[in-house]
Amino acid sequence: MKKIPFSTFLYKEAYRTISFFIICGFIISCKKETSAENKVIPFNNAMQELFVADIQLAITHLDSIALFPIKDTKDHFIQSRKYFKKLEPILSSLDVENYGFLNQPNILKIEEEDFTDIKIKSPSGYQVLEELLFQENPDSLEILKHTNLITNRLKLIQKNTAFSHLKPYHFLWMFRKAIVRVALTGVTGFDSPVLENAVEESKIVYLSLKELLALMQEKFSDKALFYRWNNEIDYTLDQFKGDFNNFDRYHFIKNHTHKQLQLWNETVKDWKVIFPFELALKNNTSSLFSKTTFNINYFSDEHQGNTSLQKIALGKKLFYDKKLSKNNEISCASCHQPEKMFTDGLKTSKGVTRNSPTLLYAALQQAFFYDKRAGGLEGQISNVVENKNEFHTDLKTIEKVIFSDSSYSKAFKKIYPNTKINNSDIRNALASYIRSLLPFNSKLDKNINGLEETLTKNEIRGFNLFHGKAKCATCHFPPLFNGTVPPDYKESEIELLGVPKENDTIDAVISDDLGRYYVYKTPQRKHFFKTPTIRNAAITGPYMHNGVYTTLEEVMDFYNRGGGAGIGIHQKYQTLPTDSLNLDVQEIKDIITFIKSLNESTTEY
Image (cartoon, rainbow, N blue to C red; front, side, top):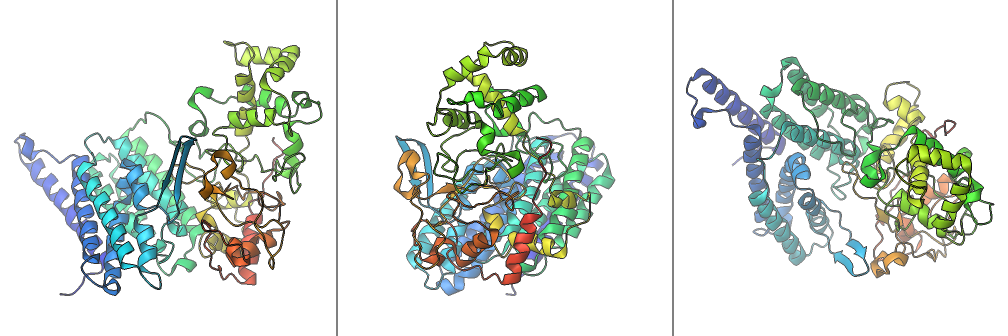
């Protein structure tokens, strides 16, 4: 029997499905009966039927892995994973936890709620199985174990995923999330580390989106809009050609992702959809690289209230006030200077053992400090205030300082009228200022948004290398280029890179700082640190948590060698791939040139 290529199969299946619903719709419209069996199938029922059928096909291919020798089962894995990617738009929205299980990287997962609740979970899922199947000496028992784990999870999802509650705004969120995921993680190879099938798998996602959109055709009042969507998806599908390293990610986002966000906004208006709230991305965003992209309240405690211009102005005054420190000699700006992109330019800041990170885009994270010991900006401020090597004071003392200053008293009473001056409001004002530090005015931002055409070929090539061959974007996710993972933005990642104590490639020894380990004393978290943004990185050196590298060239050399493993530092839980990236001299120069295109202006702050 001749095997039909998977992409051809999907097109045929999509055609049959669309034809089925068009025919059904025609028959129903021609009949006058109003019985239940003659009504148009609701979109959520139709989605469920497709979803259940595709899961079954993914399971069927997995079942074949146990029946044949490993060398004959790799294709079944690839086919099963393609069906998983076809399911991705729906599954990643309706069941985030199970989607995360199936698509997690092959890295030990540790959940640390408190000292009494630390969970250490071995990874499983498609990425783990991919690495097991395609390594030099495959372990049959391990392969069978993870195949069964994936199969059982898919069966659980198939049986228990609910669709009856879905409304049009759920569909729209789901659709946009899939578009954003492809742009920010899909085409980077984030979830296909060995085979690097990112281009082909992104194509599968868009084929799925086209199929799903067909189910919603009757929702369009503007029929031309529906056909514009289909034309745009077809044009997008044509872009998924060539190999992983040669895919043009910059123009894909600029010419397709952003256009689709605009079409999405038009669809919201056409369907007259009102969203009950906003997620991480604002409901009207039309760009991923803009001040209007993110819902800042999504990243803060809901009890902190909305940020206002008055709060920001008050917070700015506090930020530069040295009276808040015990000796009246330092302010927040002492270690976070605007002219240095809110860093201090030192290897490690005075009185502490770590490099001062930029505060730009700090608000768009889910954890703070290099070791993630604070869960919010307000909590981070408390820690700085009480640190004997920083402000060396306490919140009650700061309350008294504020209360004794008439200008502060007046401002606080106006902005926080229902409370007496208290440390909570003081921290909220400071945090409000930090939340305003979101420039999005770099050369890259202006170009990818079509405001100017000034990026050089080397800068564009550097962007594509950063997001492709060099694998930088699998940890520094665009558009923030930090470790907060899109498209849900629920987690800020920490990594073990194997950073050395000194800039040494011959007798390298790992840094003494144990990082995240100090928070909960979990042995598997030694030397883990949060991933910072590389926006303005050309200005914010020295680099790494200990400031060990002074130039971007040194940083790129470290990564190109395979991190710590490449200079003789061997750590069991290193999260950075240990193989060399094999970047040549010109490729490294182009990546650095791209990083420099992320330099911004902070004059407004």
